[in-house]
Length: 277
Image 1 (cartoon, rainbow, N blue to C red):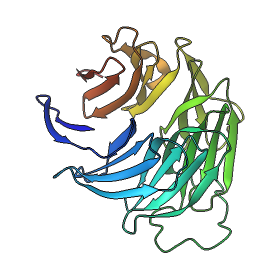
Image 2 (image 1 turned 90 degrees about the horizontal axis):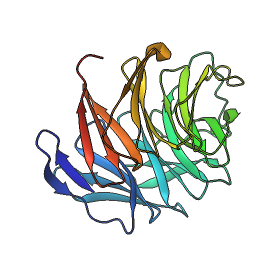
Image 3 (image 1 turned 90 degrees about the vertical axis):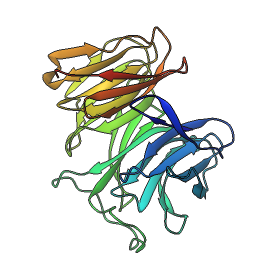
């Protein structure tokens, strides 16, 4: 992995230690620490200041496909091809538990604060005192078996299960009530966690896989396997296409203030400056 200076594209740090592909990486809220997951089934925590790997979590039996950070990052989450989502304690570099075991690869996860009216269930046994910030949170699982699942993070109990048109690749929270999830056949579902029986709306711009979803301002950014990347603002009445990728899949989208970053299969990270949204 490389840490770049965003302003000028200078490489500041090289993080080496994973075997095979690195599938996902993100900064902790402090901006000084990085969390990554790889095909080697390892989850690693790095110092962005000196590029050292400070913790390696082992326990997954298949490649790690996505991660999430709980609050400030005392606990982190990962999901894997092995069909499990796990909660980890950074301080003790230990697994605090398997949150879900689906029997099908979990392609993406997202953690968010649940709406007060939602019943998240009760834990079967008292949570470890090493669990920090799991109460009142819901974990979304984007599953390969066409299911989007919500699980109480502290209770480990299922909250909802929505069946989509194809494998789910990614998911995110728009708010404590509204969620988004994207499928392999190009559908983006917007759901209300209080009633997931019927989607609020389904956005379908092409049949290409939806690979990344990111809340942005009053709407969201989505990227697809045909190189398209677009910003949709509130009520879908304004769509802005981010051009350039030219048919190579855009794997991931990130944002910082008015800038959106995309990473594409062509090996290029692109930065877009959005002024007037």
